[in-house]
Length: 133
Length: 133
Length: 133
Length: 133
Image (cartoon, rainbow over all chains, first blue to last red; front, side):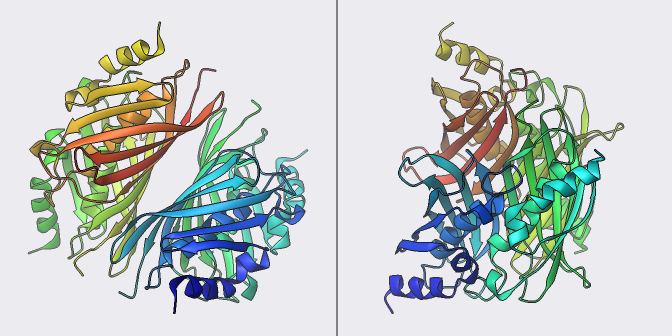
């Protein structure tokens, strides 16, 4: 199967982001871009985007980018930095890129921006592991 | 208002965790414990708990513990470590504790365990900032 | 060879911490405790302990704890949180403990405290990988 | 005083990196580049660059970049990812860049590369705080 098609099929089974309305925009080896509109359901008690909703978008892009290679890859650890609050109604774009892919480990970066303005909302970096190699 | 009551009112307005069925179990100054049952909607394409769902539970506990002091507190950065997969149907408990609270910054730890077995699912550590002091 | 003896021999070859005067206090499977006196040479331009000196002590404890098992283990990523400044002349104690050790990965926590007062200086958490299994 | 000159004076007082032979190559607002030759004294018991030595170079660049603005800035937390081992004799270059600088907080990235080959050795990201604003 063509790698992009394979990743698209994985995304079809990615229940949590699909439940939240995440869309897959683009995939390539070591790369993924996804989008999500922040709804009222995704806010916290400060009335800004909940850290968990922002993280979920970031983690979805990381998970697809790190599984665009042949072997199954799982996150060992992810660090997220919040740069600016997101507001209800904003459409957010997460773009994940590969820094390193060894046989068993990988390091991926993701940026989360507001669509249109390009305003940076969050940065995250994930360390992945391929358990089945 | 009594601090615990104040935090309970914040949780009433914590839209994203409430949307996901998170329950507030316990609050105290610098401390919060929350629970969530992992549903089929919260899985990833490996058929285990999505990193974003696990993180959301952790971040909810961190956000309540860090806002149990008087001033509004927001996360600057959070690191999560995934120790074991969570499965659909499991009830997860997140317990957040304060390591440090200065006038403007705070450091909080959270553990996520499976209820009953106490099996450790994830650990996270957050750095918070009080912007309005 | 007895595991503790093996770790002690590794520490004999741990050039950088030895160059900085780090002492090995205690080792056990998944556990290590080391000490270092912060010298004038280890300060930064704010006249407090340099982040790199504090980190080196933490990383030394993590490296010994994670290599107290049979297989060679290397750090993939470490996050350090600085809680309070350290001053020249203070003796610092770093204590590393294992959260998880699978066949190929491990998660370790370390605390750095001032000897005597027990004042917490820093916390760090490391994700390790065993490349040769 | 011209900002670059001010940062250069800070580096003159940066005892730990100077003790290790770190050189300041370039500074600008929100930016710093430093270099260090990895000596035999900076290895670990696997005979590769000690995590603490690599981190110290990264943290030095972060500290200078984050203190290139007017107000004193201190690290709250730093995450480092190790991508490839460094060997004795290699000259390493750390380049730090600003992602965000608010009145009180800042986020900075740093890459560590081998001079010449450009081979990526490590990545780190730091969250800083200005306590005196």
